[in-house]
Image (cartoon, rainbow, N blue to C red):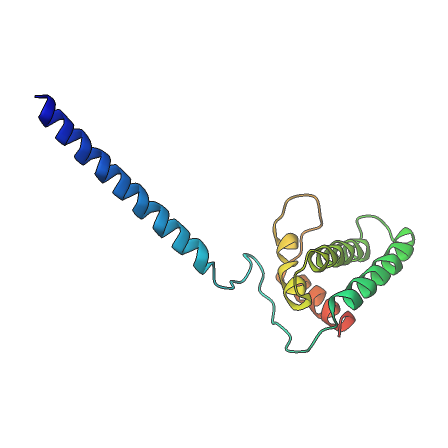
Length: 144
């Protein structure tokens, strides 16, 4: 009886190690491939084919644009369309600057930062697809 138990225990142990090894192998294989470049959920804009400035220049231009918008915001009525548009621009430009400073290319940062406006998390003024296209076009114009 001890011998049968030992054989069964060993076979179960070997099969567990085999399954565990297969699981680890497939998990590392999937992670190595990485996800394909996908569009962000809720973001539907026409991407521009223009070449944008380098990362350092982008951060400078975005900072300047943010300061200009901040300087003009006191003259706007909170909650108005113009105020909300300015707020969206500031938030979007800050997201681009953070992404670029984090090492993301300028082109990817401009596109991927739109996803933060589509989340509807309540911290920002949410953007419609048409407003996202305007924001994207403005950022591309600023960073050309």
